[in-house]
Image (tube, rainbow, N blue to C red; front, side):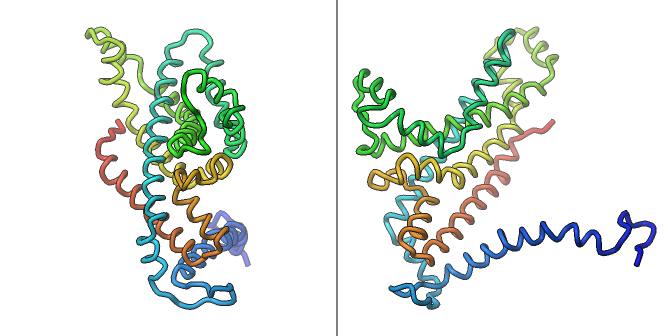
Length: 296
């Protein structure tokens, strides 16, 4: 049967056939796991894993009375804020500095982009060897500077290491977007500000930075989501959440409870809490910070 003349498809069933692969992927990899997590959060496994029973909100109440889980909240907040500020600040600084270069700016831009091409697990292995206690070249340099470095024993050093590593990888991503944003600023505005007597720093804060507000807002959202969801590989390779849970973030705690301790009900509840938290943060950013962004 042929469709009417206004349809772009020769057969009525053809659009459904074209949509079928995407619908199957969405059902298998999104709808099914989401339903499994939602239903599993209200069940608890028997001690030997032979069955489950309905537990209501017990998994949620147990989490909010667990000091280790509350500690993971604090670790995640510190990790997200420090990584986002460091990576966005340095990305903007490098983009501004290379924008003013007359020669070699292509080379510098290529070099700054390289870290983003490295997989998180590979980057974690590289930094782990560089700052390995006693033998890493980075460790030897720190010891020569009088810093007793051993991130496997000191929690604050482990946190500093994963923040620096994550920020190092995200700088390239932020650098790309800030560079594109800088290229979109009309030179006539900067020239007019210079004619009014504004110096480079004044021109940056009065002209350049406000015009970069849409790019900054977009990167703020993306960096926050990245730290919450995509940094599991870094922590798993470098610190495995230690020492003494100093680098155990929410997503790593979920992994420990779900895949190591086989507490699937608690892991499902944690996944719901994590998704709700990120959703609320994103709504907050769009609700309050978006008002300060001027797109024209």
